[in-house]
Image 1 (cartoon, rainbow, N blue to C red):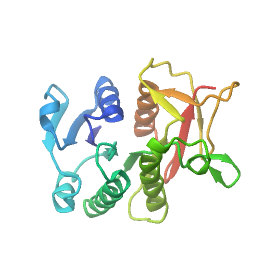
Image 2: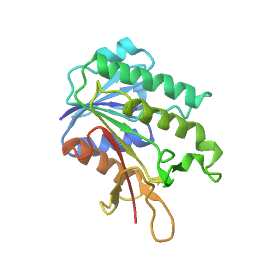
Image 3: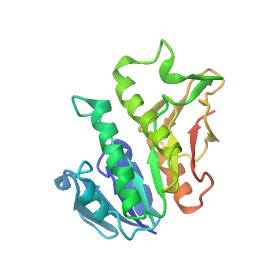
Length: 213
């Protein structure tokens, strides 16, 4: 497939980029800092500011799918920057008539009990709350529109570098944990699950999640 990847040089975006390339997909990396990447077979690098909706709309045209690993964690106003950026991504995807939009979500919007989200629990780390609020905003934005076919993948509560095992469980809107109550996934397995979804859609217009159990 010919895919555009927003945020291709970030923590999760880098894993998505490498997983897609390893499977023979053509990837156009849409980044604000093109100097962080080096073009190679299968990888095209293009500088685009996500906040520039007109430029982003032009950049998103003609792909089989768009993957967004957009993040605002390096900004002073994390949630505000992310929300404005995601509004721009969704508007650009609509304007460019993107066939499919796959979005990296957050664990904070997953349920830990009926009607209770992880982000709203007292133990949720304060340093991650702004990022989680942005991801929750993105999920609600996707759910309340019908112009773009979408899928969001929310990670487990803890996502970190590790191994690509392929041995994990998929879920939908509830936080998954192992027998000890831990909710973990490697960024490599997250990328595998996302590119699996790219290749064989199983969750159209909905969010799903994954974790080791």
